[in-house]
Length: 181
Image (cartoon, rainbow, N blue to C red; front, top):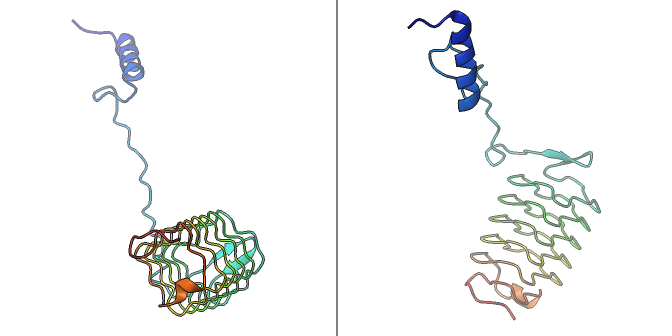
């Protein structure tokens, strides 16, 4: 049986609509446009990687003190020596960032995700890390006086001996897996 051309086209349309996809053999094949491959730079591999937040550039030595940077993504940035005094980081992503020698005194870092973040030699006096994920974070040489790590997750974190006496760790999961009191 030979199907007239009009009927054949109608059948292809019906089959395509009903199957929610193209049917092989119904007309010329449709070529999809190729999406160009884009490579994003790895912020950990490039020294001085930076981003712009609230009109300010975040990078080594930046002054972002007192800003509300809640829910921002700082993952993988080198923020060494930057000034974040009194900055609000609540619920931000800081994973694998470097805050080496940075000033975070009085910062609000409640519920941040700072997995494997380096806070070596940073000033964290009176900073709040309540409920933060600080798994495998590095605090070598950091000033923790008055900092609040209540209910934070610090498993595998590196803290100087005696640093826990300077800050509050109530209900926190400590580096060895115990719960702080």
